[in-house]
Length: 433
Ligand SMILES: [Zn+2]
Image 1 (spheres, rainbow, N blue to C red):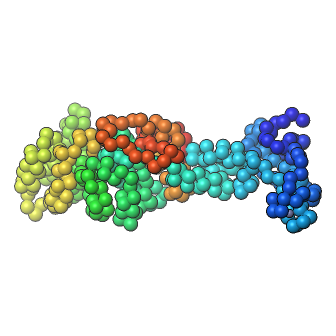
Image 2 (image 1 turned 180 degrees about the vertical axis):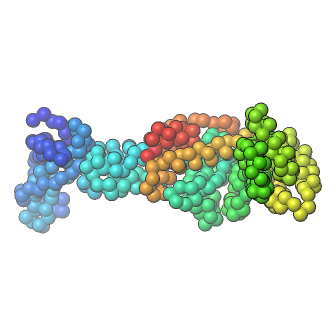
Image 3 (image 1 turned 90 degrees about the vertical axis):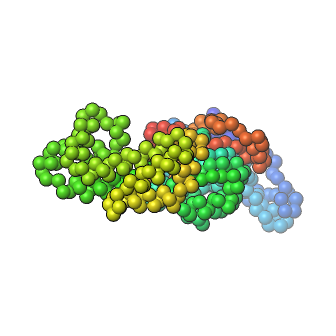
């Protein structure tokens, strides 16, 4: 019979098709080995048939039925079944099938792989877990010089995602963003002294987690998290006044007040500008809140730190007392994080833009990820996505530091982590399911 198996040490003797394709194979017997215990000659002792899964053929799962002789030692009583190098006894599958599953298990569903191969979903899961454990041990991404940190909802909880903002890559994902999770991460981070900037929101435990471990890092609070509070303050005021409008006034305003007032004026069309003007006329009190929102956004247009600080002071000084309560609390928040907010003007200019880009990309990927996976699997699918990792390596926007990157041995590869825009592309095409 033609050797359709191409596996060393066995030959196919029969082929049956049913629900699966079953290939019956026999051991190609050589000389009877010696007893591994006492080195005396072994004797035949019946046969044993075992069933293993193999790589699919003709679009069908393959069952391999292997008929092996057993041997027994008359001296010590040990029985021996000849081992076959191509078998993964633990998984009841050929090693080549396990390899094929490892290649694909982070890029497709476990269910699809189970159907394709005839293995149980749990077996596929176990193979994936082994692979993830190995990746954890062997894959190292280069510690970012500019690091972004945020929360993203994944598998029902908020998780912590750490990004390389200079290269647009995901660097690491932590189960939660508590100090219990962050501190050990920073404590054991290789090349901690590389980190020069950390960009995040105003969440205080974060700063407390890294400050003692990253000797050269400065915190900058992401611009968009800051200005978002001005938009939220405006929203408070809008809700207050919108409800007082009469039917006629509502008709006059026509367009969504919310949309008109939240947009930056530069992004309004001529018709929208007219509509906004109508809103200003109809609700003068809201116009005041709107102007405070816009003036707050413009603080970030200042070319340097000193003028930005002055602009903020001027803005705060003009806030009417006992009114616009949310804008007052925004001012208070700015004071509470003063140094870290105004660090924006000391930081490399593209930090906060790429932060937002990265974050939106990750949120997109998270939303498109197939449902029903555990956090661990989603994390591995994201963090070790093969194609995204390939693209990510070698992208570098800031000059390398003087010192060479230490590697921990030849088995470790140094990369930057999965490239976020590529991850988004893969997720868009359904590839991360
Ligand atoms: Zn023996």
